[in-house]
Amino acid sequence: MATPTVGPKAILTLAVATITEFAGVFLWVYFVDNHNQPLGIVLLVISLLAERIAVVMTALDMYGEHPLPKNFYPLVLFSGFVEGVIWIVWLIIWDGIPGLGGPIAATIAMFVMQLLAHSWQMSLALNKPPIFQFATGGLTIAFSAIEALGTFGWLTLFRGGNLILSGVVLFLAFTIEHIVQGLAVDKASPPNFT
Image (cartoon, rainbow, N blue to C red):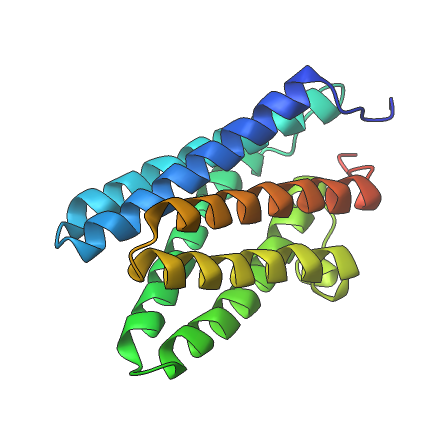
């Protein structure tokens, strides 16, 4: 297998994943806060599915010479559903506990849920069980923490009325998260598609 390289395709898929997740999450909360939950949830689902398409594009680009496991595509789509549930649970916790307790509890919950989900997603992408083996890896912990802390900063600023700065914080958090996640997948490669 050729060593994966970062080229224009990898940069494009990183950009697609980052922009779609950013837009979906940002607009989801915007519409939830403006009493249009159905539209917000639709945008969140579409963005997470678009992000998953970028994941599939990356996998095909990096590992195209190996056939992907038969269950790869449905599991990738299911992982988008799982991430959508994580986001919804996160916001319910944030809004459901009064005072600073809600944001703190939501941030901790986001970190734990994303750490487990990211480990599962890496195991899936590389076909390397057990599914939570990457949860103790330093890079997986780092990019899960980046996402959790980034969302804390974003929603605090967003709900404080600073939409532009909040958007910058969220976009940077997702960009850094996706870069570190790519490094973690690369470090854990090659996939076990035999």
